[in-house]
Length: 318
Ligand SMILES: Nc1ncnc2c1ncn2[C@@H]1O[C@H](COP(=O)(O)OP(=O)(O)OP(=O)(O)O)[C@@H](O)[C@H]1O
Ligand SMILES: CC(=O)C(=O)O
Image 1 (spheres, rainbow, N blue to C red):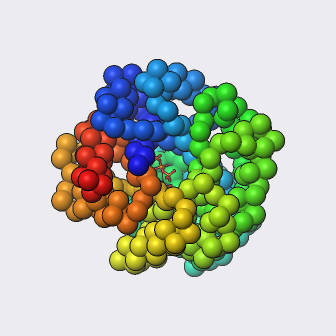
Image 2: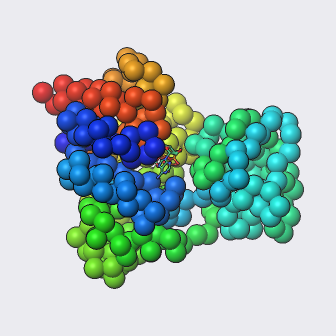
């Protein structure tokens, strides 16, 4: 079984990475939504030096995100916020597609705004659930199909240098169907990196429904519960996870379970009973790999989190 962390400011130090490897980490994810491969040569050197065998890059793909903010923006419930020109930067395709009444979940659903006015270059929204909005956070536009290419220009640049950077796998967000996988395969071939494994992230209902058409074209399916949890009431997410796991087992395709596996360990050295049960159950369901994200990238206890992940999974395997 594979155990992944996510590299970020909290763990990008040789001694911490070394400790995570000693705890059983077999691979690491680099989230390229926060910066390109070329800007992370120091992290790449650390990953090599720590002897981490598998390096996954998580592309931008068709995912919608807030752009870069000069500083975090406080969104106050009931107040108005402008997305687009002269406001919080966001993709132009979203501004074009959204109509008044559209709800937009921000930062994996922590914040919620509703469009009140759709101008040609901006959306005026009312804040329904407030909080602090930071740069590059996710946007989920429920029920709205926003046209976007499989790969961004930056994704293509990253794929060109992936092989020389030691990348072994590519995670494609928000897979919508067979065409997205074929486009990524083609881009990898063009980059001379046809042997890099493809991890298809299931992050919304489009991906759930399309899974049968592309499951045999990918190397691993990723049950990406952060965004997937925005696509349904949260009490339905466990059933969806179980159904996706069963579909992968039936097809004989490996799958990964990721997100909030040990979320409380971002700020506490010991996980909750519910979190260790979640890991144990994912392993019993047949997961080929499990991954930590914010816990290792930005949390206070990256080494302890990796230890709990690996030990709990190994206990389930024993
Ligand atoms: N390459 C990076 N550079 C700087 N900060 C990073 C980097 N990768 C991750 N982080 C920080 O760690 C946090 C958690 O990482 P994670 O990969 O889960 O990002 P995310 O944007 O929250 O997730 P997702 O891409 O799944 O929506 C990020 O929100 C960011 O603050
Ligand atoms: C990891 C990720 O992208 C998610 O769970 O949405």
